[in-house]
Amino acid sequence: MWDAHQSLRQINDEAERDGDLQGKLTDSSWDFLLPLREYRDFAAQHGRLGTTSAQELAWACRLTSVLDDGTPVVLHGLNSAFLSDSGDMKANLLVSPFQFRSLRVKQDCVNLVMCHHPSTWLIDGNHVEDRLRKHAHVVLTGHEHQSRCFSVGDGLRVCAGAVHPSRGEREWNPGYNVIRLSVEHGAARSLLTEVEARVWHKTRFIFCNSPYSNASKCFQHRQSLPALGIATASDLGEGPPKLLSRLSPMTVTESPEPAQDAAFAAARRKLIIHFFRLGPIGRYEAVKAAGVWEDSDARFEGQTLWARVFDRATVGNKLASLWEAVATEDKTLIGQSNPFWTQP
Image (cartoon, rainbow, N blue to C red; front, side, top):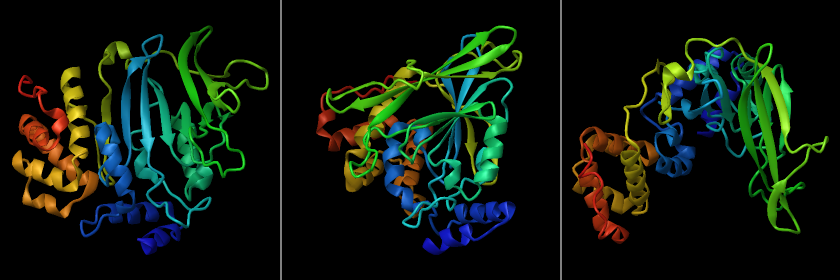
C-alpha cells in the first residue's frame, strides 16, 4: 500500500496519474481503500451518503431545503484521504479529476463542496482550485483546525476548526460553524452566505459566538447569481435528499434514488444501527439466517460487504427477515414490532 501511494505521488502528469489511480481503484485483486476500513464501517451506519468505496469515492446530494426563490442547493463530497498515511505532508495528497464529474452546473443551483484537506495539501491543488473557482459557490474544508472565512474569486471558503481538537495543539480552541444561505434581490440576484463561528468559552464552559474584527455576529459574504433558469426547485420539487451522482472512476450515472417514505427510511436506519452493534460474528449469522448472503460476498469486507448485503435485502424485499434475524441476536429489539412487515 505504501509503495502504491508513493508511485502515485511521483507521477507528474495529471491525466497519467488519474488513469493510474482509476486502475488501482478498479483492481479486483486488492482493496486500495483498505486503510479507510474503520471509517467506512462507521459511515455505513448513516445511510447511502456514508458510502466510501472505489465505485462511490465522490457524491452529490440535493438538499431538502431550497433557497428563498426556489434555487436548489447541492452538496458535493470529495475524498482527499485515500492517500493519507504516516507520510502526510503538504502537497502530497490527491483528489484527481474524476471526482469532479458531478460538479458541472453552477447556473441553476448553488454548489456547496466539502473536502477534508485544503488545496495546499494536494498534489493537484492548483487544478483543484481551478475547478472549485469555476463551479463551487462555497467550499468547506477542515484538517488544519484553524477556523477562517475568506473569498477566492467570487466564491467563499470556510475552513472549519475542530469540535474537540487535541489539547496538545498550540492553539487548542474547540469550535464549529453555523452557515446560513439566502438569496438577495436588488438590481441582480446575489447569494448571501453568513457564517456564525461558535467557540468554546474556557471559563464559562459553553460554546458562544466569536465576534469578527468588526464585532458583527457573523461573517457575511455576497456573490452574484445569474438570472433564474429553468432548473430551479419549482421544477425539481421538494422532497428527501436525492443522491444525484453515483460516481465510479470510469463512469458517471445520474439516476436519483428510488423514492422512499420517511417511515421506511427511518426503519432502515434503525436496522443498520442495530445490525452493526452485533459485531462481526453476529452480523454473519444474521445475514445467513435472513437469506441475504451469497458466496460471492466472501471476497469483500467491511463497509463494501455490508452495503452489498443491505442493497440485496432491500431490492429482494428481505429487510423484514433481516430485522427478525437481528432481533434474535439483539435483545433490545425484543417486543418491538417489525416495521418492515407493514411496508410495501
